[in-house]
Amino acid sequence: MADKISQAVISRLPRYLRYLGDLKDEGVERISSHDLSIRMHVTASQIRQDFNHFGGFGQQGYGYNVGYLYDEIGKILGLDHKHSMVIIGAGNLGQALANYMNFEKRGFFVKGIFDRNEEVIGKKVRNLEIQDIANLESFITDNQIEIAVLTLPKAGATEISKILVRSGITAIWNFAHVDLDLPDNVIVENVHLSESLMKLSYKLNRKK
Amino acid sequence: MADKISQAVISRLPRYLRYLGDLKDEGVERISSHDLSIRMHVTASQIRQDFNHFGGFGQQGYGYNVGYLYDEIGKILGLDHKHSMVIIGAGNLGQALANYMNFEKRGFFVKGIFDRNEEVIGKKVRNLEIQDIANLESFITDNQIEIAVLTLPKAGATEISKILVRSGITAIWNFAHVDLDLPDNVIVENVHLSESLMKLSYKLNRKK
DNA sequence: TAGATTGTTAATCGATTAACAATC
DNA sequence: TAGATTGTTAATCGATTAACAATC
Image 1 (tube, rainbow over the protein chains, first blue to last red):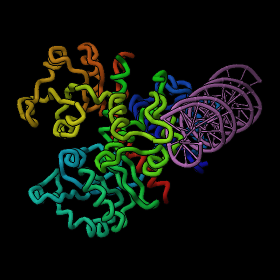
Image 2: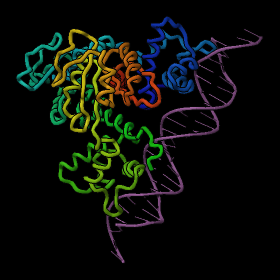
Image 3: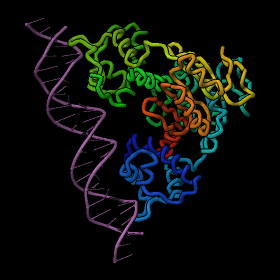
Image 4: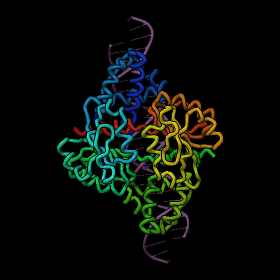
């Protein structure tokens, strides 16, 4: 188990977690792959295959224990640890993410927010003062930041990514509309909003 | 051509468009699938297969004309038309999207922004006054809005989606962390930020 | 024990890559 | 014409679904 798990499987894990969380809230203690498959509109076979990539979480004749499965998937997703982040780019999107409380519930803490624009430096977002991007490198090392959130225009993003690599960042959550060129040991996860909107637009176009 | 094009192909189109735009900006007039494959870190075979789903855009012995291909992919993605949107939920994320100028460049115009919270109704975001969500239904019909952007908590999202369906909305860009249950003729595109962050966290966990 | 449901192997389906004939 | 590169068919690879033996 846990050898080479496909991107497709990983992408489904957060959705499983969400449905299991809902089931927990409803007070459901156990569920079969079949019943879950009906709720989630996927096949029971896929559910069992997916879970078995990580070991046997179920029990024959019984199904899966909701609470246990929820916890196990949470662990697989690393939600049993705290993660520290910095946000780089204190524009609307950066501030929106800084203010989004739900990340903290999952263990993701915003420790700093940075911008290069002097006009916003010093202003407060939530409980954090926007810092000069010049302090970024030392801040990351001193505070052992794992994740950098890039919410700035593409030109800046490419430039900053070099600083991030130098400062030993582990992962980048990239909202800039550019493919960052990073060493293999730095993890990237892209959120390209305009690409998502274009996909919507494609389907819209298709319809007619 | 254009029969049943897989989700995988569609997801790649916006990225092609981006690279072609960059090439145009660099003044490159033509490119072969081979050269493009090197830039984009994909196979030339995939590029040719992808484009040929929509008809022959290239020419043997020459390659692809950058400007022409850019325009054609733009058309496939529906970027040759204007699209009107409303944003529902004037929180940080909703405001960030309302302020994001780049969507307009692609033809996506925010015509209205709505919230149920009385404290924010009447406030201005960019050039738009936040409206009471009670006006939503008539606004959509009167202004022939195509796309509704859902940037509100999950409970509200499910509720509002019913109003949207009733008002004849065509597409929903859903940022709420919930799977909306909609009729087949309503298009949905989900952006689940917390799921993206969990994927990042998985990879982080994996590394250790 | 009998019934239910998993874990897992085998079959199918779809997507990606390779190869090459068509053609500019 | 010769060279380059597409469009397209065939081969491979991987992911999903089906089937069923193991077992709680």
